[in-house]
Figure 1: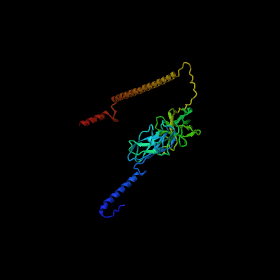
Figure 2 (figure 1 turned 60 degrees about the vertical axis):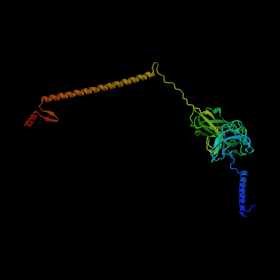
Figure 3 (figure 1 turned 30 degrees about the vertical axis):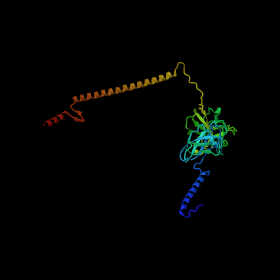
Figure 4 (figure 1 turned 120 degrees about the vertical axis):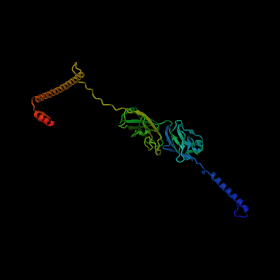
Length: 360
């Protein structure tokens, strides 16, 4: 060991070089230790049941946080990632590249492809171009495909044309999940309507089902729905969320299928037909009613004409009476020097006196 306090000063340079060399060696050892890498591999978790048949709805949560938003691709492998499984993966048909956010990671949802049959699978997510760290499933949490047959929903033939308020029977097949086959949820959705407007139905099991996932349900249709239309019965596995819900915190449905059926119109009550009243031979009821209308119209016309004639007669009489009164007044004025004018009585001598005064 060099003593940096020794004299003469020619040893200072040797001490400085020794300290710098020790610092560089320490940094190299730190960065070469496992687990102290600048970039670490993320994990992939499964939301909801970790198993189901092909065509099941799978929801994954990507726990990886790159420095910037980065596009990733998803693949599956039958070998655990700790055994190098992500080096030989199979593409998941129908899963497009997705973006991973630096703060929130990403959620991916897809239907399990039929091409990847029964068995256990792990997931590997790699960045497009390899510029960001990868993410993979933990060895202890694979996704298990239970059967190569997809789940189905079928409305019983006896319920194919049920009426409003009736009870229908629904048959499920290949309804297998790792949640113990919890009671599925059933909803009624009119064709051409947004799924958020679906009406939840109260369903009950008919028996306990079998190991192959065959199950029978009964549900009662609402009494207020429109009849004569086509509807879809939507069935999904129950995982504590509303039918057709989309909240991330409760997304865990792995099975969701539907079947079409028609709600029949309620039968209209029929009444006994009554025989029409008999009419005499040769008499047409329609002709009789028309004749009555004509007679009524004729009577109204005659009454109106009589009123007009009477009014004209009254007017003529009044005009004649006035003429006779005027003639009688002229006759009296001509024969009698005293007559009435402007409601005042005058005589001819008074008029003459007035005229003589005015001349003066």
